[in-house]
Image 1 (cartoon, rainbow, N blue to C red):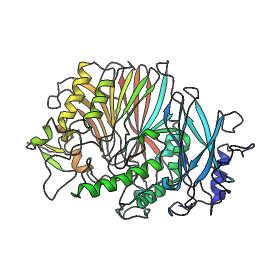
Image 2 (image 1 turned 30 degrees about the vertical axis):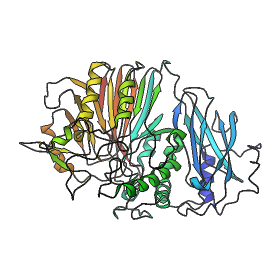
Image 3 (image 1 turned 90 degrees about the vertical axis):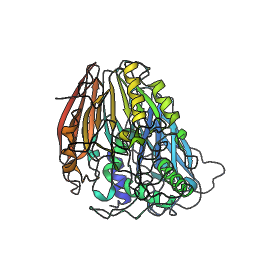
Image 4 (image 1 turned 90 degrees about the horizontal axis):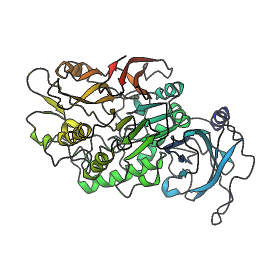
Length: 519
């Protein structure tokens, strides 16, 4: 769906975007002339992310014709920005300028600092005579400060072709303070199903990944979600290629060729999201994992379960990527195999829960708990999940128990279904100690074809309190110092742009008592 310049400017005005009333920035000396565009340049909207107590990153990309990677020209363009304490910009606090370079797709990232903790700010950009929509960003509460309550949403798996991203409308209605995206922000290939068509059949080059990010960003509800508040991110597989694992592609591509593709995908990802310069890719490598604190209430450990992992276990010469593997696959238990990589795992295990926050979150793209998919005798596991990397999981479980970490909660995505589970010390023993709680969120739009098959196996896994693959939506979490409440928010048919929402179920975790209970 395309939007006229008039439509976008009207939307900006409704959010309180007043015209710039004073010079925002001086011209960059070595850039001559005035930027002119063939159409409104802010069609991909604005976004903020990676919040801290003193600031956040704000982002936009100049794209007057978003699917034409040459439409903005090949010259650097100065871009002004302004930060204010109010949506009408009557109380400005910062302004400045950056340069949008053609080699970065004319995207800009501004690492804003010097702000007050725990409050909203509003921001906007200017290029030439054109003004962007207004976005709202949130700083996090001061480290260790007393935070009584917080609400965040987490989501994953938004296939543009499969339907409309209308779940973000409900996140806005539910007043989420933070949106956590757990991967599959785009889909790198077309499955030619659903209600919309992507412009690329299968992305392998930088321009093709840029086009896919642009078409996803043209969804008005995704743009609205970004304008609403700050986000934090990790990726899963479809930002690059289905079921890739580290340097290994699903179809056994030569490593050098696959890493060239991964470099293009990582660069396009950075160009289209409000993430810090520390995550800017160096070829096929990007440091994405990080730890964020929200006062004394909770911390979030954002993990990367794709870039550093070992290849999936027990593959055959003709079957790569995700497979159902049997319990005879001893490779999954090899202590040398990892889902996080050695460096990230050390970082996680050294720092997890050290700040003594009330709740301690591991946010990543996978199902953490065991799921035996075999009905009856024997066991079968998904090779992509932590079930395929049991030594990594055991090391995390040991730290959770040995350090007695306060209220650990694991959140994930990827599976296009909802899981609610007790994280057990020994998943094969139902009486084993529950060490943490787990919620895996369903998809924004991506389909699930395996609900009927998978639901039959839940009885084999008594620690799994809910498996539900029939609904699309997201997960809403509300925290205070006594309880964690999770609402499983579902939307009606994603092929219908009209939004209807409901809470499928709600679960509560009591402080000091591991394991979610149905509310």
